[in-house]
Length: 240
Image (tube, rainbow, N blue to C red; front, side, top):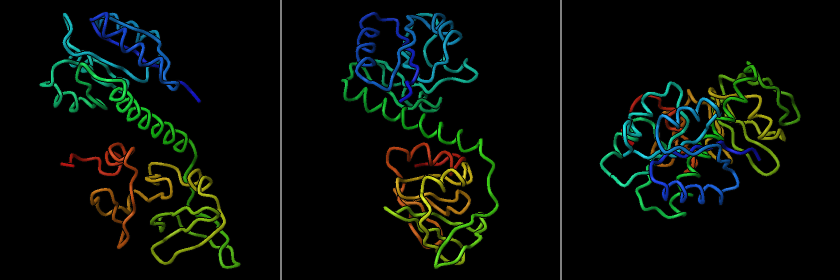
């Protein structure tokens, strides 16, 4: 399992110590630096490829939210602060979560899991974007080999030993593996939205609570990845 490179920024020694202890309890995180000011944090960002940033807001000189605005390609950020009034701005800046001091390890872990889910989703998208998209799939079903146009696929449902490929014309049941289809149908055209479902992004008609509407079918969307998936499928601003 690869480690997520993590940087802590807080002007309070006790806060840094607490965060460092929390990070040490999460095997997926690797602490690459600590900073008591944004200027020191900037040096750390130049020295390390930081993927996750825990960032205080009220600091001498440059506040954390102002610092984040200056970064050209910022890491995923989780704000840690004693002031609730900055929450709206934090989310407008793209922060994945907002921890209000004092916060427990459970609350820290909840925010961290959201960040890890987003990073994993981004990793999968990058891997799949590196593979050229196919125009057709060749699958065996009903004793025949079919050529299925990828732009006709609505969604794919995975079962224990087979998958169902649903197109605009019909459904195909095949022994092809779900994982292999996920590789052959790379993002962003196709997205895995649930452990058992992959959808064609341009075929999604609407989001209704925790369900995506594709034609007359409702597809469940993973609660852990919902926020990030909604941003990809519905890139314009929304009121969810």
